[in-house]
Length: 237
Image 1 (cartoon, rainbow, N blue to C red):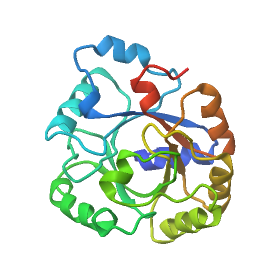
Image 2 (image 1 turned 90 degrees about the vertical axis):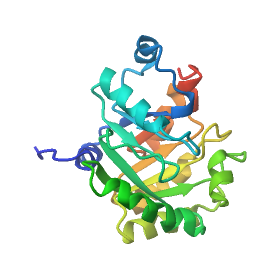
Image 3 (image 1 turned 180 degrees about the horizontal axis):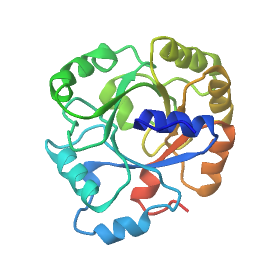
Image 4 (image 1 turned 60 degrees about the horizontal axis):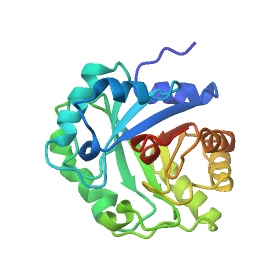
């Protein structure tokens, strides 16, 4: 049995043991702290992580929401920031995202550089993550904010090559994202192709609205799945 020393190692160990993980994504601007019991009751039984972040978030909201979540739940709270302002030292870990599917330097390296002064003196676990935006059938807020074009779902080789480039450049996790509220989830063909090519964990999110879709994504090879909009709307079932 491998001793788990970090949240990344925990995800890596689960991947090795073929245990599937599930995170819900909380947008701080849409979260209601006045109804903690309702929130806890909505949590899927199989949840393993809470992600916090959004494409744009009001100043200070991320920190207050993270502190609240830590006060009511023992689940790991991991930052999934849209920019450098969405960093809270009260979280457990940070997905240090680089939008490797785009060519906008602002989200390839500029936001990361701006975040350094905020994270260097915290106890946050930093998890280098390659973020790949895939066409989900409609323009998403991620696409608008990052000013990048998502990769086409039918160009599987480009997606695989992008994911491999991320792994080769030192990313510890690859995140395949169709975008919040996506019409179409990342296809099983894409997930399987990326899973077969990589030897690091794969996170998949965007457009997953049901248990049936969740299991299809798991069966295709996702190690950790993220549910966002469907959880917010109370429609995940």
